[in-house]
Amino acid sequence: MKIPADIEANILLRNNTPLEEFLGLSPIEVHHLLYDAFGDNSPVQLRNDIDDKTLDQIPLFRIIEEYLKIIQRDRHIKLTPLGALPKKVMVELYDKRFLLDEHIESGLTKLWKEHDCIAISSARLTAEFAGLVKKASGKLTLTKTATKLLQTNNRLQIFRKFFQAFTDKFLWSYNDSYPEQPIGQLGWALSVIMLDKFGDQPQTVDFYADKYLKAFPRFITFFRNSYSTPERQFFRCYGVRTFDRFFLWFGFVTVDQQNEYSDIDTDKFQRTDLVKSIFKIDD
Image (cartoon, rainbow, N blue to C red; front, side, top):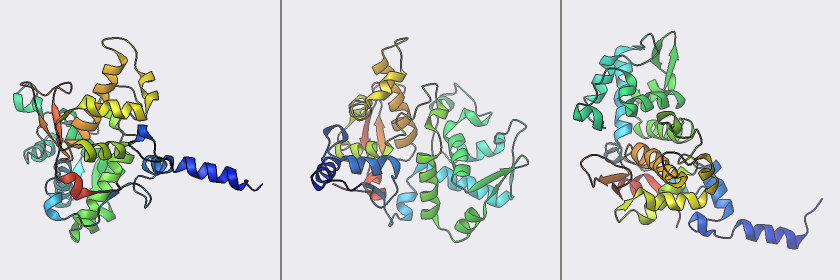
């Protein structure tokens, strides 16, 4: 059945009308942003001209590069009986000091096992989702794709595969005890747009979390009144996943700690130049 021209025009108009709760993006733009963030029609694109100087400033990417080089050098990594990276590999990666763990640095914890440093653990799992590393018979080896990219020194393609896997496949909820809903991860590109728009000034997480909640109000229903209000829990969940373990890990923000130790409620974050060097964002 053919849709009448006036109804079709109204649908087209509605789909292309800017929405305040989505920072002026239209429903069709939001659809691409949520479900095809790396497609040609997404308002956020990874640049094709990301150079080595830029890649050198991305902490989590530097970890994954060194991790792949260790496997390349040793031909494989034998996992522990529990299926984790051995301590010597963890220490070698951590000693590069690309991402420092506050608890390890303060001496509160020691680097004994893989999950003592969740940044390295997350990078390792993401590499498998990205098709760069494969696991079989208790050993980790490089895939043919990773071997070729390392041999040709194609750092940009390694980054693209790793970043897409981190945002689309690796579950951010894996690292915390908050609800197993994609809070922060769904619409991660919207958070990048917010950072691009407002990140020139230091802001607390609450500033961004409030805007994210307006875009995805249903997420608040997954929190209950317990040790704090649902809103406070939501804000902290969004902050930990989006700022502590995404923006900071990729070098998209700097943090100004208001107290002696990091505190997601009071720390202030500011955008770095990497955001504009890595993303092309439609105005």
